[in-house]
Length: 357
Figure 1 (cartoon, rainbow, N blue to C red):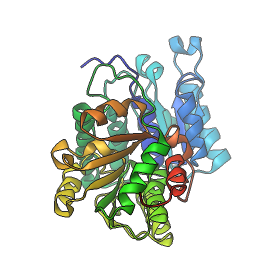
Figure 2: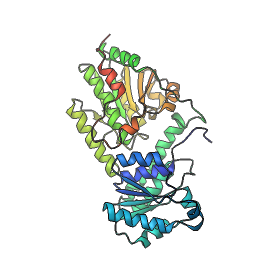
Figure 3: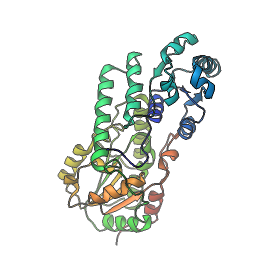
Figure 4: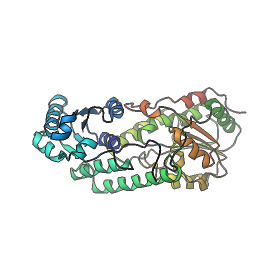
């Protein structure tokens, strides 16, 4: 399908994956403006992002010398544990040899070369292009590489079937009014009905999505609600550490969720969550993170209150029969660089509601 709406970039996906591999310095080999916004955001998350700032004459004569110079600067200035060179459209078109530049630069820091550009229809190509040299370098096992490829395929399938890639164009929406949905949620929880609160979040976004579950518990501590979260300890180094921190934060605040899936398994977790819903037979469900991972067959008959951070996910969730859809705007930038659970706007509204009709 040819999409007529912006889609995630393979270059940006490569940068985020490098971060998850605990790369300290990533060097974008291209113009200074390439992936500018995400590079700045990732610097807030602890990874330095440098650029070779290729100019028009280097588009013609090549940019290996600038790349070698930036690599040496990065090593001498930041003393990194790991580095990554990330290709761009320019470096790929002019045929730059990234591996050769790393070798000729003389740096001794473990460094991988990521051959990528933005011309792929699916951003997971940037993830795979990063994980494959990481496996060659011994940073991850061959088994983990295959696991990651499987999870990426599953996440892509969810987006194509029930997500923001399910139609050529989806109108962005801010979803329902938060105070109205919070009121309904408090009424359901306080009425004695059986509920489930599920977090099925993608990686660091869980730092805020976890707050929705905590807020429901804060507002209605005696309600009959089962809490479930995808915080099992699997995945790349940062992903495992994020899961540990978030689970500890939830437990400290009085919620000990059932663990179902890991933070990188959000796309493959739908059937497992669905089967648990069938076992619990809830009257209502609060589902935060990637609600559309759960096939509709499992949620029919349940009053679903979904929380997403994607304005283009509202319409697909309503198509799935979710009664209420909330959007946490700008959630992702607020969860970069954090080490503890972040308060959410919807969570604050829930806490302001008295529990019960």
